[in-house]
Length: 621
Image (cartoon, one colour):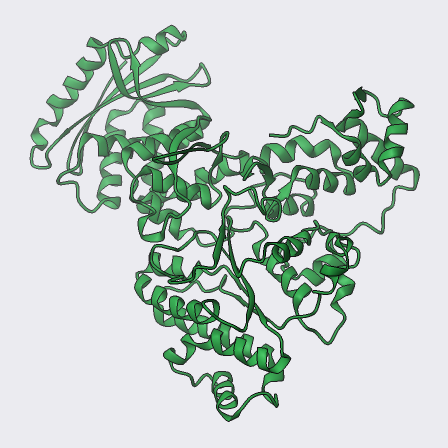
């Protein structure tokens, strides 16, 4: 990952708004302290460049009425490029033109610039009564030459966004999808009186506007609109579909998955498959929905995921782009803080910052906060976490301690399969932006493998809210708070009562629960203590392996060793005996050895025996 301590003359020139030759002159004159020449290249301390940039601005006057605000919330390319600071992503146009793929799907996490990118494509390509070229003449795409300039304003464009289709029933979701389609027909009012349309076309158009089409007729709406637009403009049509999988995600979480898949399959197949009126199409989403045959027969679909280097710079901010923002807003001294909070993503081989969070950071006077949390419905996260295994809980707890996990990575994970084992869970969290690659992936005959970790401080906080909130969500905060309080007070009775309250409230059946199940449950419950304890699971100490160990980060806190036992739900009378066995096991196998060697002498042993929704807790110091 680029640390940004030294930069080249080209990057320095961009920050100082001068030529590279002038930067080299400043280096030779000693006006950029610390700059060193390595062969024909100069390595320049970033701090020296930012300091000089600030001095140059101060020399021109402290007031900067020309400084544009950092856009937050808007997805209008025209508005942002005209009135706000815009990170230039217009070379995406060139890449798509050069690529010549009929249909391209980009999968990226939420709030990583997908909607703005599609709105930029719409503004560039769409035929308009206004001269929209003025919004690109100072951008990178215009410098690419006449061939690309001639594509501007040439095509009729269909733009659909399903990002707001978040309803609890298929009936409401279907109505919302139909409204999105109907609004796009209304946007193309030129078709109402088009001489290129026959009586059948005009009847279909009018019934669409009036909301009188059947579901079968709606399934052909994308195909029919491309046909009508192509006839009217005598030009092939571009289709842009934003957040295509949001209704599908809702269908999975809310129980109407089959209905939404069937409808969307017919809609997309009609518009994107073997459509002679299609110039090309672009879709965005979080996951690639493939195995359900959503794109059945669509052999011209090119999928680009976060593992691909191609297109890696167009969604999210690069290191150089964030450096330019710090210079523009005279906040070069905050670069390391921005890295700690919002950097750490890796798309292909490119280091990427969360664009939503970085923009909010500058908009909010450079005060670091958790901006990414609660930016969309997190029901899918609860669906995944609510079914995780003890092994998955242990590895998630390890992530919060700063460790990484090794896993098989599947970029084709599908919604019905996101809780099918740890690999599927971690692949989903990677694609959704909750994890990032730690090093390079390895391609083997058995699949793609890699190490994953938490990207930054912001996501570490997200794990304490969205990822782990499913625990608190089931039983409320009181039971969890009581469990934490019992640990601090060494109160076995309080712990036993709090555990029973939690289990009665959140789990439907414990009749066949194993020791491993309870192990995972406890790991999840104590995960919130990670700011004060190193939480470890199934690790060797003394002559055996303890179940859970809490090693204090602050020496004034006691160390904690936990051992669990489980009996059948009908054998509750065995619990006190099992708890005593667990206490003896801790002593006999010297589970306290590891912490004693760390100089921790105040160690409390917790032994918990479970049977169904009952627990017996015993403590020994």
